[in-house]
Length: 61
Image (cartoon, rainbow, N blue to C red):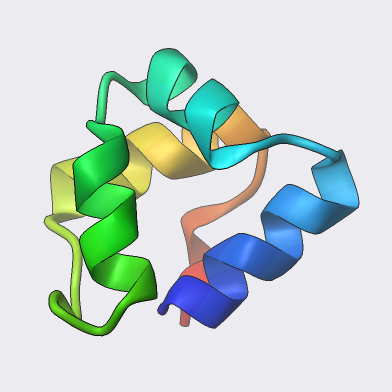
C-alpha cells in the first residue's frame, strides 16, 4: 500500500507532512505504513488520501 501512496506523492510533489495536514491523518500513521508496522488503512483514511491527492479510490486497487 505504501508504495502506491509514495508513487502518487512523488507524482504530485507532496510530502507526507503535507499529506498529513491535508487529510488529518497523523504522520505517525504514515510512518507505520512506510515501515511495515501497518499493512492497511481504513476505508475512511483511503477516501481522505484520494481526495487530498485528487485521485480515484480505484488507484489503490
